Image (tube, rainbow, N blue to C red; front, side, top):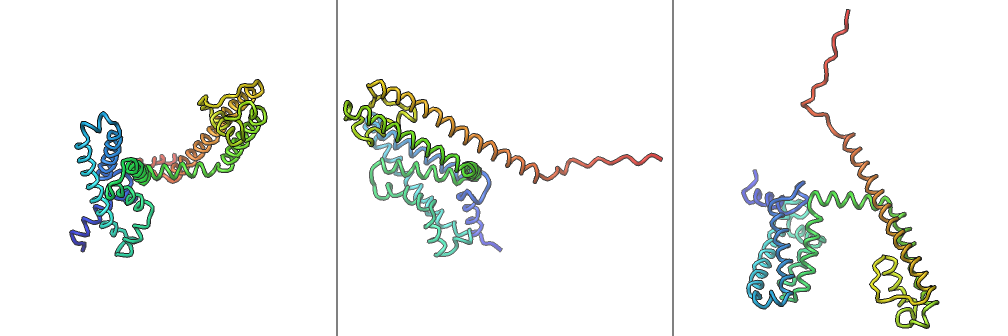
Length: 272
């Protein structure tokens, strides 16, 4: 017979750890909401017009939220023993070596060490992403997306390799054509690679622009190649997701059990 402490431990484990249930628990939802609130407070603290009049209130709120997350981390460490793999002292140490526990501990470091808001912001966002990806439905979707991308890894690698070759050829061409007339931008292939990258990705910041006719022709061809490359990568990813989704629907239909509410039709007796 389980003791009340064991029952509470098992209940908290199911509430805090996403793998123990198939949907988002109320407690995990509250934790995600508080992490988002912490991120918003850190963002607000970087604005002088908000930090000067409300700096004390923001600091108090951040301290309260940091204390909550400290308690949450300790509770996680206490109830993780409900999983036999992490039971006992060695099991707790084994849990602390897992990537989710390391991310949770790193997210607490800015609060413990009282370091800058930038470190707290980055680590808190990292923890939000980590916690979101560990949730039941999201984790299954993540696994589905990774399997779909892995099935087309050769095509994607070929596209990336083709984009790299196009970038190098474009940078080399601009170095040869405009390296002497525009040395600040195209005086070397590494300098021209920045222009080739922003042109191939169709961003075009305008900080590096060819002036000769031949250079502009190469720039136009590079931009067109970038559009074609992005379209090709998009089509490969869309095709992979479509095929993976079709396989999953087919598997679900094949393994679906007939509804108990539907009774098989009785055949009429044979006529004499």
